[in-house]
Length: 190
Image 1 (cartoon, rainbow, N blue to C red):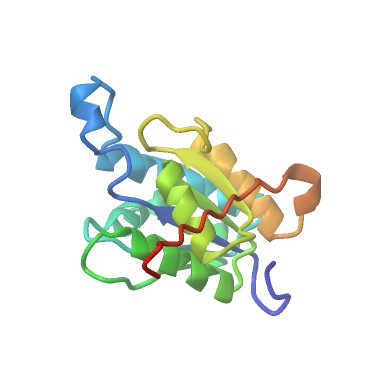
Image 2: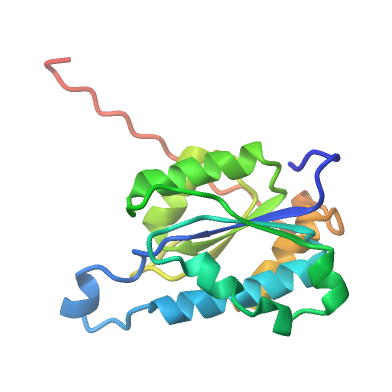
């Protein structure tokens, strides 16, 4: 949960590799392009701020998806809301690997995010939970053949995260805890 001394904080994690694997080629599945992800982030930001977020934190990646989404965001927001909101892209390594998702989830927890919007597939969401076991997240599907994340309109996803982060709705009233199964494989040679 968010510390009371921090403003209502929403994090957005974007996996730039989600929806780009080989199954898109061999199974004729539609890819999720960078432009589609940028549009999703933009709509999630607008929704989060309308929902009460006053601080937005973003994962970084080598394609600069968050920075590109924030370009000209002031055209979509009321000037007073824009001025009252802090935006920060969390610096990350210049390469895209799953460890980045785990690390940024940990950082969002430590920075007081009250909720996060995650763009990715099953693997991305699994990585988020490795970094923040009890993350209050809105799972937005941009991966391949997803089971956990759903197709959800991005503005609504952001609004839900903003409302939870701002305390406008109680997390336990609008969410449930997903089960996590830990599998440990012990090798006979230790």
